[in-house]
Structures are given as structure tokens and as C-alpha cells.
Length: 145
Image 1 (cartoon, rainbow, N blue to C red):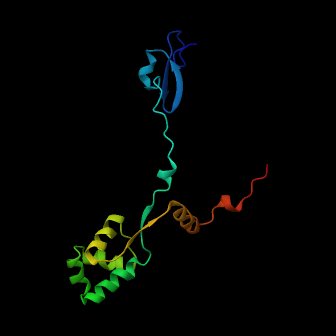
Image 2 (cartoon, one colour):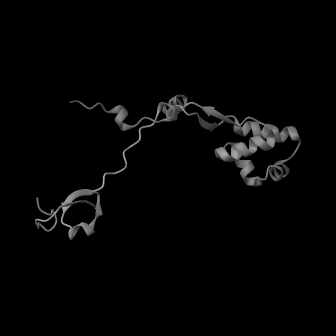
Image 3 (spheres, helix red, strand yellow):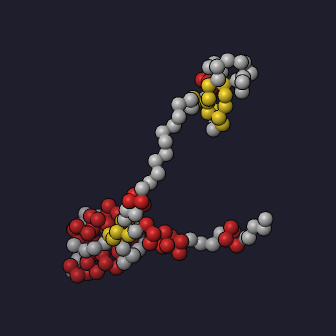
């Protein structure tokens, strides 16, 4: 079998050029990435890895931090200084316009003594994500075979 690029009959090298696997000669193999060596075998996830709980921020996060602020008797500026956040960020978090990261919510948990991050199984999360999905054309069109 010859080189797919120049056609010479020499020892073939398996090469990937722009995503296409080709048999090339040693001279033309420099045009792409050699894939002679087998890639690392794909490791399948174990059931324990798939069932590992995911962390999510509670849906009532905005109201909980607002209640914590009001309970302490502080205005947004004072409360923001206490929890080491900017006043603007606090205002957006309380309004629900900004969703906190897991790390940020965990920091709020420690400072305020509230439960703001929960562990959720992947199955429950998938159900929640399916509820949030909007309908696509593929959902409407039925393909006839």
C-alpha cells in the first residue's frame, strides 16, 4: 500500500492530518500527527463515580441571605462589608439576578451559619435539567422512515 499523499511505496505510517487518518510515507508523516501508538484505553466510569452526589445551591438562596441580613439589623453596605463581598454583588444576589458559585455559597454558609449548599444525586439533577429544557424542532418533527 502506498502513501496517500505522494503515492510512494514505502513503510507506511498512520497519521492524522486535519482530523483525517491516512497512511503516509515517513517523509510525508511530518505533515500531521503520528497515531501509530495506540491511544490510552478509555476508562469506563464505575457506578460509584456516577452516583457521586453533586453540590448545588439551594433555590431559596436570595431570600435566605436577605433574611440573614435583616435579622442582623444591617443595611446592604454594612452586611456586604461583614461578609467580604461588594455591595453591588450582594444586591444582585439578594435580587436573584446573580447566581452564586458553589465556592461562594459555601463561604456564605460558613460566615452566616446557614445551609445554602445541598448534595443532589445525579438522577435528581437530570430530572431537574429535563424540566428546564425548552422544546426544540426535533421534539416537534417526527421523522418517518
